[in-house]
Amino acid sequence: MFHAAENSRTKRSINLLTVSCSRQLDVPHSSANLPELSTVLELELIRLRQMSAEEKLAVSDALWREAWALRRASITKQHPDWAPAQIEQATREALIGGSA
Image 1 (cartoon, rainbow, N blue to C red):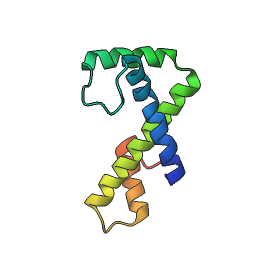
Image 2 (tube, one colour):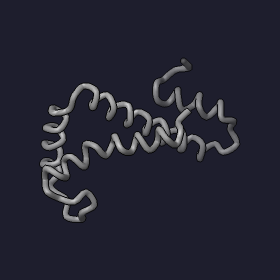
Image 3 (tube, helix red, strand yellow):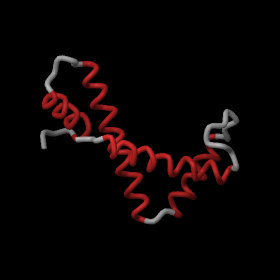
Image 4 (cartoon, rainbow, N blue to C red):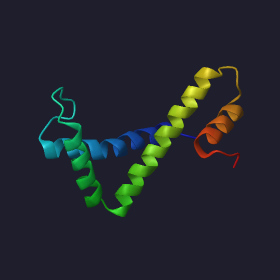
């Protein structure tokens, strides 16, 4: 199960790349004056190349957990009468295509 502590860690990991790129651009993370998408993508690639394997794994894990939580929330909203086990099964099938 996805817990609140993991959710907090997930958000920090996902923001790692975004904040890093914002600093390289000298633009506040919440600024309305956003740079061109191509510039952001280039900076993301630069940052990814600078990351250690551990950092990349943490970001990957955080994105996976976030995708899982979002898909589960969507299924829960679509099927409010389903039991938690049914929701988890549908989430698993949606994201990994099976009943592992």
